[in-house]
Image (tube, rainbow, N blue to C red; front, side, top):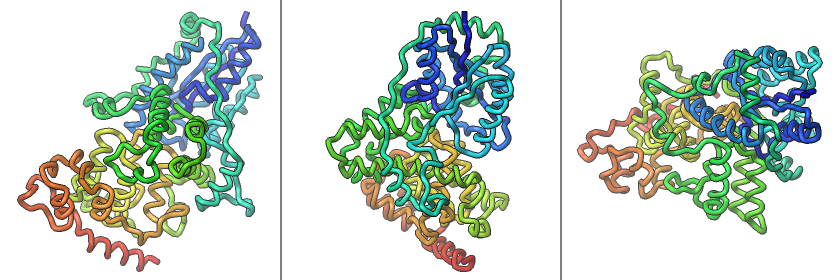
Length: 487
């Protein structure tokens, strides 16, 4: 007879390997055969301050949950779904299920931490044991701090400090339990009519279904994450430091959406990289630094909870960004979103984003610089668009990177560093392979004609391609003037 029911709450940790909460619950069940283990995912779009997912992230989440449900069933654990305010949902389901223990991976933004603290308080009042575990970072944000006792605002000393602590070896997947997930699922659903099917979470786009390009490009889920990691380490890791800035080359890991949803842990990624080489090569070190930058962004988000809404450097809140409610600005912003700026590299990036839910990192910097400096529009407009359209948009990296380009963030590029999209195209897409792939209006031109036309115009060479929204040289001067006046 069951004497304890352990409920696992999944959030942004959609995996079975290197999952401390899952391992803790299953270890207990193996030691105590009268223990039942259940899993639950709550789509929380009601807790105040928790940011609802964008459209591309919802698509990814659905497919990741499909695989997680199958993987957990192979471990003998049924996965259930609910929608609503997180704490209230868990509270309403715990009593009919007879829950005695709760397990979850920790989250790091203030609304999420407050919700989890409230859940622990409620659990204690009900005599339920609640346990939280390290989740999707290499080290907890409070474990790394400078001698001043504040928090790191510059990446290099942060990464030096965190690297000095070392990185643990990841856990494997737990051994399967003997419980029958199908029979258990049937029994639980009789007790809890409020539980939903995955389809009832309504995560997929319909009328129209715009996800065709993402279906072709990605394999969400833990298996896809492990395959992408192995493919990168065994192939594209060599030469990564040299080739990572070239958008037409398959030189990056493409792990960012898998890390964003916790389908693979950063510890697993770095362990796999470390095992593949006898010494830390330049390529491996450079890649590890990129994983470290993700960690730094979460460090910032933990200590600066309104990172996506307010400038990290408070003085930048008074910078004269152009707002979207101005009709002219609205038109400029919509052209940027659609990849109709008349600047080939910018348009290529924005079209890749719309089609695949992804954009090469070098191009992300270029399009962000173009929006905030050549068009002088508020970085928050771009951050919100990326939040809705990127499959890897998270609560830390997305706003931190936008603020870095805009000049308002921690360890930011100075405002007067303005990416020239023509120069960037010549340097990093010399043969225009990336531009030709995503801007078919220019595909019939030579690379020389494409780069020259980006400066001088295309005329009859590409009559279907839009004229530039702004003059790059003049708009750069206007941005610097605005910065000078503000400063």
